Image (cartoon, rainbow, N blue to C red; front, side, top):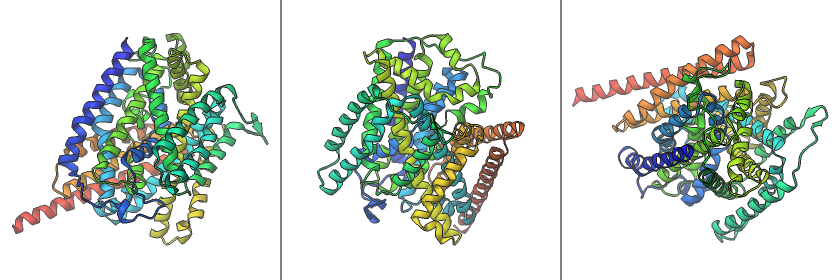
Length: 563
């Protein structure tokens, strides 16, 4: 009964946040204008700027930001017990993540759909743009490496997900052409596509496919990393209406179905927690709960990557300014629901405390097996509905693969945008070429995935998880800093963004210092250098923010003196 009550309590908290807090932010902080002309209309090019129905855009936004991260993070963080992760997921989603996603989307549409890094130039000064672009590039680099490895892990461990995932792509492309070339609408074709995908999940469970365990001396997981990065590079070159929007719309409905089935399975099975509420006997080598909890859960509570999606692709498709609340805040709330489901699956989905303890026997084992733990726990919950465990696991793994691939596609598209901005700013015209930027994105992501852990070719992405989580949260904190200064400039209350910024910045800076000390002790010079560069960029940007705040305060004082 306990997990069921926790789920119900989580639903109530998320609803109250959406019903009251997001409405307060929209009316009093961001003051959305229903008559404003959005960048999607102003720069409509049929490629990246496309006015989009808010339900379709929510599907794209939710699919892009959800991915595997809100599953991996809580599935690892439960090693400290389920209660600390639960509190952070609920509080972080309602008061920080929802506001962060909403605010970065608002800031972008008020600045002609410019990225949060580009907007930083206006509020922090000209140096800030270059610093922000470099930080964003490193974050996207890790996102792509981590998600490619996560997908490869699922393909290897759950081969039934291969058939439904790869056949979903031609289905989505067909739907895209039907909906946007014949103008018959997106809803009905996508529902048909969803029905086909669900049918393929049952087929995939019966007909699992896989690569040979080794090809040319390279393991199958490494080949899947290269294949997924190649797919992401190609998909990122397509107009959003060809694959991105129809596939994301299908994926969002698949996730809603998967989430609903998991929660219904939880209510039907009524399992007890097999994970401890607070783990007082964590394995040796486990990092401290504070501050590592806040960067391990990562996207389950707040994510800097969400701000990149909000200001990179979603702001270019927003049809009406008031839709920013629906897309931004509700998208973050949906991710909170996914993180809550992941937490409950790994806390109550195992058959016994002994089985749970065997999976979380070491920190390394918990970190590497987060997705597998979720698929196993969720499959057990779905079995209470009469679904065979193999079908339930295939459904869950397909759902995660679809969302992770969506994030990979969007992230590689964003990385191409960032490279183009760097090329324009530093007079490197080659980077403004779409094909060259896409190739550089592919090569750099593959190199990171393979070199992060030379002993595990192509599997280095999971070693990047602590560094990814920390960098992700640092990015979120800096986005909140930019929004805070924008609000201050507009003479609006800043405490709703300033307090979250101070908390996130302090926790993530502490976590980064801890990670750097661990990389130094382990002699992992690559991650030490990469983390050190990111940490220095972050400190530099915070100092630029402090200087900008002092300049703004001085300008206000002089204005009062003149009055």
